Every structure is written in C-alpha cells, then in structure tokens.
Length: 372
Ligand code: ADP
Ligand code: MG
Image (cartoon, rainbow, N blue to C red; front, side, top):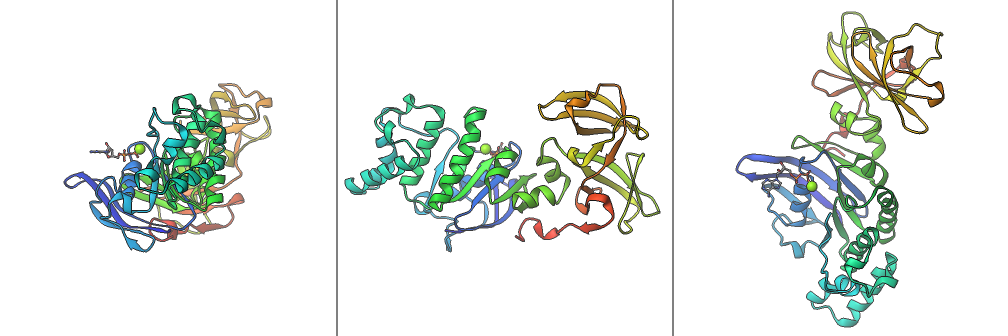
C-alpha cells in the first residue's frame, strides 16, 4: 500500500497557495512523519490525502491507483484525529464496530474483528465501558483499535498524542510504533513535535513556507539539514546560527572573532554558520584566553544550558557540566569540537565541516524534496 504525492498543491481561495508542489513517495509499511510549525499546512496535506478536501493541483496515487478524485470511502485508509470522534452513548465495543456495521459486515465478522483489535491495543477488559470512563491513553488506544478493526492498511494520524500529558505521550510513542510494525500498517503521521517525528518515523517530511524543505531519515534530517530552517527546527537545544564572512583568504570568520580554516576556497561573501551546542566545548578555566561571556544559566538536570555572548554581541548557546557551577558574567574559553555547518546567505547548505575541520564534504543536495 504505497502512496505517491505528485505535485500536490492546495489553495483554499483562488491562487492563495497554502501548499505548493508537494512531492513524496511513501512506501508500504513505513511510518512517515509530516513535521512543521503550526499553520504550515500539515493538516491540509493529510485531509487532501484522506479525501476530506479537494486537491487543487497535482496527482495522488494510492497503491498504484490514481486517487486524486476518489471519494474518501474508496481510498482504503482510516484516520485518527487529535480529537477522536467517539460516540459517547455507545460502549467501546460498539464504537469500534460502528464503521464495520455501517458498511454491512456480517455480525460474526464484526465481533471477531473488534475483539482482535481490542486485544491488540490491550483494551479487552474495558470493552463494555463508555468512552467517558476511559483515561486519555486508553481513549487513544481505543481510537487506534477502530483504525485496526477497519482493516485499512493505511492509517492517517493528525497529532494523535497532543492531548495527552507528557509522560503518557512518551509511552504512547513506543506503543504506537510497536503496533504499527506488528500490523505492517503504512502510517502517515502529522506532528509539530520534532522529537516525536525523530523517535517514531522511518522518514520525515519537513514542511515550511508552503514547500517541502527536506525528506529523509531522522539521521539524515539531523546530520545533513539542507537549509537553516531544517537545521534549527531539529535538535534541542537548538543549533546556533552565526553570521560569518569569507574575505579573500581561505578562512571563515565567525561573528567577527572566531576563525575557521576552510577545506577549499569559498566565494567571498556572507554566510551563516551553524554549530549545535553539543559541538562546542568549554575549556577548563584559566587554560585559554576567554572568548565568550556568560549571560544566563539554566539547569537541565544532567546538563546546564549557558546563554553566552561573543565579543561582538552574537549569542552562542553552550551546554556545560552543572558541577562546574558557571555563573552569569564570567568569561569562558570555548572551542569548536564538533560538526560545523556552512550555509549561504539564502540559508542553503554549502559545506559540512566534520570534527577537527580538516576535511569538508559537500552536503547531498539529493536529499531535497522530490529526490528520495
Ligand atoms: P497545520 O496543520 O500545519 O497547523 P493547516 O493545514 O491547519 O496547518 O493550515 C494551513 C494554512 O491553511 C493556515 O494558514 C490556515 O489558516 C489555512 N487554512 C486551513 N484550513 C482552512 C480552511 N478551511 N479555509 C481557509 N484556510 C484554511
Ligand atoms: Mg494541524
């Protein structure tokens, strides 16, 4: 049950594009996450795939069949929403079997499918309860049971965990992922939460500014971001983005102070350099000339987050050892010890300088959008 999105576009009002030219192939049995900030069009894309709203332009193929204009019921998919539409007056069993009964399945088959679905999500003992007598996590599993019972091989989910408390959300991530693999479901999962996407998905599509920014595995998205948007959207604490300039020689100057050797000449121009906080190391006090001043400190438990400033006022976030008791106002010496990303003035990735920065590699542009 593969799905192909070929140039999908959406305008709710004439020419006012919410999505432009979305290109992707979703393989059978994979967990595919659509991620992006609020309002970027994630729900819109999912509703077009489900057939709940018309596709303005482009072609949708489901399982080799053009589905662009198929009615929702003929698309072989189910949908789990953020607010699960349950019938409050029906029991769990009747809710799960509702769709099947409506489609005139024989009673024995409905009962069998419902029982198996409830067993899978560990809700058998709650089958006679009403939805209101279930906890948040149980309701979520219940919504999944409905998807499972329907026998559709493709399941679309729109932020299904966002109503749960933090602890349950983490637990449900694993449960959902396990269930998806056990059933061999193809899941298209919408979320604004980069951690959710990173931990659950086989592939991630990053949406922003009406366009697909990048599609890749979680590792590719994290380690080879194609632009500054993707680079700063994934990873916590966020990647530092610093103004940089190449001027004549083969040297890159960051924030007018730090110098980096370049593996090969780069055009004289302005650039943006990205460095994740964990790619920066704070040197022991009094072992090197300080180059940053601490502004604020924040304890994160195992780590300490330090907001610092370079000489020209550019902000630089670091992580440090809480045992070192860094204080606001103090001067520290910081060294780049990890990966450095070089983006051009438009924010497009140019170079990735690996540890030590002696050899650079050109980023793979093939990761962009269509070419997966
Ligand atoms: P997301 O799910 O990523 O938060 P949406 O797909 O809900 O984003 O919305 C994307 C954009 O489309 C937003 O600017 C939103 O205001 C607009 N939009 C969503 N639904 C409608 C609609 N029914 N009519 C007009 N505009 C809409
Ligand atoms: Mg949405």
